[in-house]
Length: 304
Image 1 (cartoon, rainbow, N blue to C red):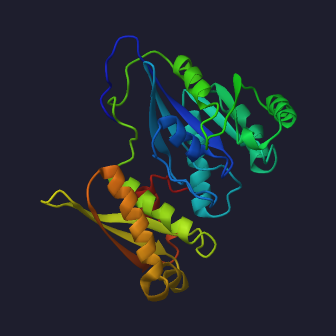
Image 2: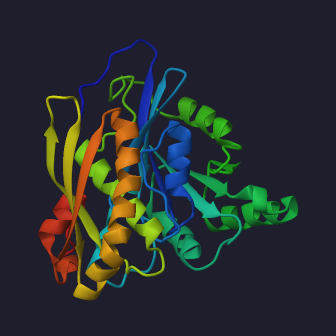
Image 3: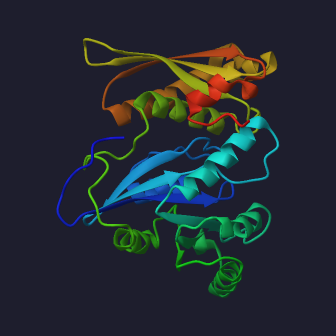
């Protein structure tokens, strides 16, 4: 962690976002930070490890912890992600519980509310996508959620448009404890650039192959070389579990992987404000989902 930043009258703290897959946690983190720090796709469980986005409001530094979606785990990777999500909640100063207002309280969202009694931290209910639901249904949903768990406050937002997000920031800026900032003023994430670059490529991979590619793919940045001309050469490996998946990622005559690389290179370059030379390779690593080393690479604890 970075050295604390002393300043009179400042506040700082950690705010964990928990919710079912695709409730909009990553979109909300990006909206509150004002910049992209967490990848967003239509594929469920896109966020795997905890990603910290840093928002500043008035004199408060709000460290937003985007956790993996909480769901009924089946595979080893699922169990690691759910454990990470609940661990993030229990280490935070405030917990934001995100519920998709369109889907309401059912399935994973209902399970999360049932388990909240084990989280001692102050909890705030955030209903997302409220622009798609009529006011009467929202009031009913608010009442139902507050009956199932104890919330300090309820916010109705649209993470996509930003509606209601300013009020949420205002609340958090006053709710977090007094103290020095954890990060420099201009820092928006604690994710290493190598890891963020891999996440961006994974986002482009999922967006391009949402239906065709199974969930079990993983990307690692294996080489990062700053060139004398100010550009950067990045080599990344896309790991899949079977040869059939490798063929899907490569596409006909390499067309698919070129498209993924072009989209990732542009976004990484925009963030770095440097020219990027991105080289993607696809390798088969059978059963990587049970390899502890891959979990360490992703920032997850391998479940025992």
